[in-house]
Every structure is written in C-alpha cells, then in structure tokens.
Length: 337
Image (cartoon, rainbow, N blue to C red; front, side, top):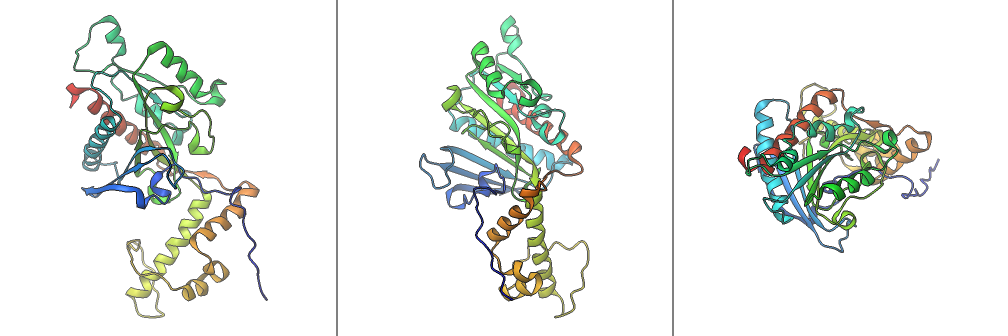
C-alpha cells in the first residue's frame, strides 16, 4: 500500500513564536557571550532583512532558573547590563521621562507579567510634579491598560491618550510572549527597541506600538510564558528520538534500559533516517518542519491546539515580575545602582 502525503497550506497553520531567536536568526547574530550559564545573543536587523522583521536591535537572554537567590541575582546582573545596552542603542538620555506599560490581563496568570512587573517599579512622576524629588531618580510613571475584552478600549488607544497628556520621552512595554520551543518557556527574556503588538502572545495582533505609530521610542521586554499544544507534541517527538539515541550509543545494542534522571538532551548523536522510520513509521520519514505542519493540520481544525503553561506559573510569574521590576529600577534610577 502506498500512502501519499498531500501538500499543506502553511498560510492556515503556523506555530506561534514571538522570539526573534526562534526565527532562523542565527546568521544575524552580531555578538554572543555566556556568563554563569546564562547566554546572551545580540541581533541587529537592517530595514530590508530576510526575516521580515522590523529594523532594530534584539537582545535575547537565555537562562535555566530564577527561583533561587543565586540564580536570580546572576540573571539580574546580566539583565541590568543588557537593559543599559538597549537604552544606549536607542539614544535614551539620563533625564528622559519614561512611561512603563504593563500589558496583559492580571486575571490570567500567564498573561500577568506586565502587572507583576509594575508592582515592583519605583514611581517618581508625581514627585516631579510637586517638585520634591532627588534628581538622581528618573521621571518614571506606569500604566496598566488591561486587555481589550475587559475594557472595550484598545491598549493602543489608552496608551496614546496617556502619552498625549503626560508627554514621556520614551516608553518601556512589558508583555508575556509565546514560544515555539518548550525549553524557552519562562527561561528567555527578549529586549528590543522595535516595538510590540499587544496580544501577540495569544495570536491577537492589534495596535502596533512602535516609534512609527506613536512617534517616541518604544522598548519592549517580553518573556514567553505559554506554548501551543502543537509545540509540545513536536518537541516530545524530538525528545523521544534524543532519548533513544542516547541509550543506543551508551548501552549494549538491543538492550535499551530506560532510566530516570539522565540528561540526554545534550546527546550529539542522532538516529539515522532508517532508524527514525523504524521507530515512527511514516512520520519518521518527514523533516522536522513537515512534522510541525502535520501536527498543526491535525490539531487546528478541531480546536485542540491549546495554549498551555506550566503548573508552577503563579510562583514563576511573581519571580519574573520581581526580576524585571528590580532591573528597571536599577537601570532607570541612578541612585539605586
């Protein structure tokens, strides 16, 4: 029996990712470094780039954990350095007024990163208004516009109205993102001066916030907090092949004894195409991209490509909000450094 795989219309099915590092951007990396097991990639895109992304600077910080004090402080140190870098690249002056905007929905934990960050920000604009402020502190205000479904008003409409009344020199936008790889959920920070689309993490692209639309610089800081079911299925297939490859190259042939607590993800050996076909049948003959497309075609039409987060999301979001808030205080207010 011959089974024919039909062509798949990619315009209907797309694994969502808001991270530049997940969009075949390796050739655009200008600088990379590692410190305390934290990796930083700096990407600069010109106006006409093959990624079809906005021109500007993108910084990606990859880490494994922020739940203990040591790891938290190590990531904080790197984050401080990289936020200072993006401020310099965006030509932000020390006395420029800043409006920090926390996008998302505080009633939905994975989407509450902006809200949690704002809780940790040192606000000073009101002190400038009454004239009682140490000049070492920057003029900083915050705004939580909430989501369109809760207010009936687009985030951009609220933000542009506040900008008109308060006249900040630049804004910093905090938002939850979506990833196309399980490994990056809650373990990646993206910083860019290219702006942001509120709601993009769940597929709602409305009201771009960028210097092109609001006429002042927009720095966006995001952390992926969700992935789709299609991502989980695809990654599980890849992990299965890595797991079997590990045992194949580390145990006697034909005696695959599966054990727990083995870090097989760094295994450099891979299964041959024949072995993949033996393991997965017809699926094993497909490329990684074809498997992704097939999973999307299976899940999307029946509404099962769910948006998923981790079980400890409440605890992690609180930590990440504190991390971003502390770093913004450190980098915006000179007296806190």
